Amino acid sequence: MIEKAIEILKSAKSLFTLTGAGISAESGIPTFRGADGLWKNYSATDLATPQAFRKNPKMVWEWYHWRQGIISKAEPNPAHYALVALEKKMERFLLLTQNVDNLHRRAGSKNILELHGNIFRTRCLACGEIADYEKPPKPANSTLPKCTCGGLLRPDVIWFGEAIPQNIWQNSLDFLSQADAALICGTSGTVWPAAAIPEIAQHSDTKIIEINLEPTPVSSIVDVSIQDKAGEILPKIVAALSQ
Ligand code: APR
Image (tube, rainbow, N blue to C red; front, side):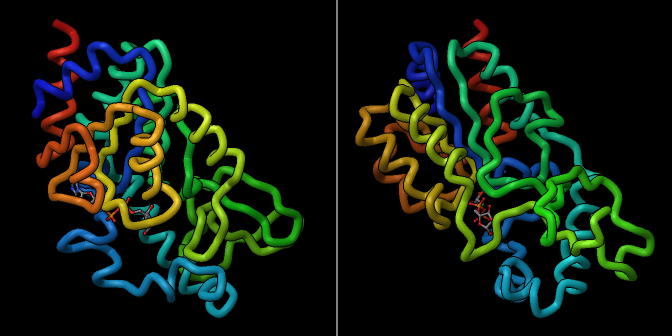
């Protein structure tokens, strides 16, 4: 299967890449639905919905400060760096990530669209200002982050039940419609609308490569389904493309 993936990428001029939490797993960042996934141990509805934030902003901020702490100590892994190398080889490349961990940017990827936002940005509930948010206030669980306008800040991420940024989604679809190949990496394919990408790609005759530790709902419709670690497979593919 890896040879078939290499053939597809060798002849591709335009590559659409979708990533999920699995590409950051080898950086030590827990996924959401794997064996020790976050949603196995925490309640998504208590922590990642607008209602949860309205009801208990302190608990939600403690959760995001905890995740920021884990992510701040994490480093991009070989899978992230392989995508940076792949971007340089392609005439046209778009990376749509569902991840909010900023690791693609830290690894050096350029053409990134963050479908679910970024955990190191905040949005003010009063004035709507978007700002970088690197360091939680010390002690993290004592005060709620406030905007310079006095309004309460929330993480600039997309919670369950919230609309994704339409411009990002439309730009992704526009790019996908002309892509020769699509690489779907480290996502369980269970959260919409990102889960629709493989089927959309299939309709526009785009060759689809999936890399995931285990089968997903789209493994049967993609052209190549590689069940292995992204941090092992992607560097091998990129090395073969460099020969
Ligand atoms: N290499 C490749 N795939 C991996 C690896 C790895 N090293 N480790 C785990 N995976 C796969 C798992 O098999 C799983 O299919 O990554 C996938 C992670 O799936 P999820 O935890 O559901 O993460 P994701 O698909 O990104 O979730 C989508 O759900 O909770 C919301 O907003 C959150 O963006 C997230 C969205």
